[in-house]
Image (cartoon, rainbow, N blue to C red):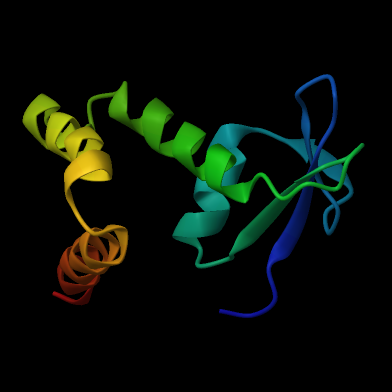
Length: 104
């Protein structure tokens, strides 16, 4: 992937794509990711990087639809893993599973 696409989040909760010079939606962020464009989302006022929280919002919205992939058992286990498991090992295992799925 190339340089990340800068998206600014304004206090009114709107997302602004600085490359396209227009407001975008969470669905547009999902489409960027599907097109292998890496977003970097920052709060307009503070400059704080909020990319992870926006990506989690994309996943949460996808999980509300018919394409949901994460079972309640998986989500429960994931939440428990924050207390029980080594964070690096858990992240590496999840990333390996996703990468294997995408490579197949």
